[in-house]
Image 1 (tube, helix red, strand yellow):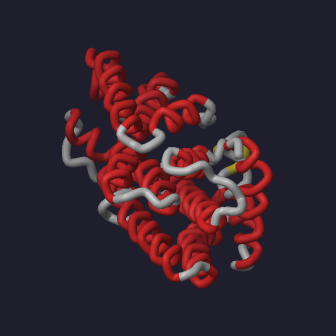
Image 2: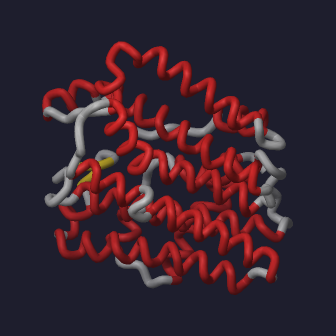
Image 3: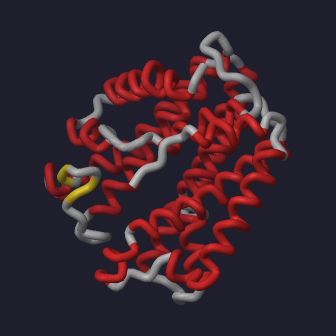
Amino acid sequence: MRIEDWLQEVFLPRLRDRLKAIRALDSMFYATDGGKRLRPQMVFAAASAIQEPTSHLPWFSAMTDAACALEMIHAHSLIHDDMPCMDNDRYRRGKLTVHAAYGEAEALLSGDALLNGAYIVLFNAMDEADASLSQRISRAGTLLSRHVGLEGMLGGQVLDMHPISHDRQAIQAMVEKKTSALFSAACGMGCVLAGGNERHVNDAVRFGNLFGLLFQLKDDEDDRQQDEKEGKYTYWQALREEQNDMRTALFDLAAQRAKALPHGERLLTLLQGVSTEN
C-alpha cells in the first residue's frame, strides 16, 4: 500500500473514529484538523522498512492506531505550546489557535483529553489483539510514553522555558527532547509493530532522532527572520558557520541508520515522498 493511500483512506477516517469513540470535544476535532500528518507518515514508513504494510496483516490495524495516538499527542503539544503561558500564539496553520477560538480553559482541557485519549486508543488496540500482538503494542506504548514524558517532549518544553545555557550542546539537547522525541517514537513504534528486533528498533529510534534534528534545522532556517525579530535563540543560530557541514553530517548519519534496517533503502525512498510541514 502506498503511504498516500494509507493516509487518506485508512489513517484519517480512523483518527476521526477514534476521536468519536472517546467523545471528543469540538475543540479536539478542531485541533487535529489539518497539518501534513508527518509523524503518522513516519510510523508507516518505519513499519515499511521492516515489512510491507498491507491491510490483511494482523499488525496493520495496530500500526494505524499507534499513528492516531501519536497524532493526538502531537496535537495536544501544539495546543499547550500555543497558549498564553507558553508561546502565546493566536494563529497556527492559517487559523485561530485553540485557546483563541475556544478559550484558555477549554484549550487546556482539550490538550489534556487528547493526551489521555491517545493512551485509550492504544489500550483498546491491545484488547483487540492476540497475545503476541498485544505484547508488541505494549512495547510500542512504553516507548511512546518515554519519548513523550520528561525524558522526551515534555522535558524539552521545560528546557525551552528554562534554558540552562544558549550554547550548541544545550540547544541541541532541548531540540532532541522537544522535537526529535516524537519522530523517534514514530519510527520506533512502526518498527516494533512490524516485528523488528531490538537492533532494528534502536536503529529506527536513532534515525528518528536525526530526522528530528534535520527537521528543526530546516524549520528554524525558514523562520529565521521572525525568530530574530522576537529574540528567539534557535538550533539554526547555535550552529552558526557549521550549519551546512552539520546538515550534511546529519543526513549522512540518518542514511546510515536507515540502511541498517532490513529494508532501509525502502525507508529512505519512502521518506522522499513524505510531506513536510511548516
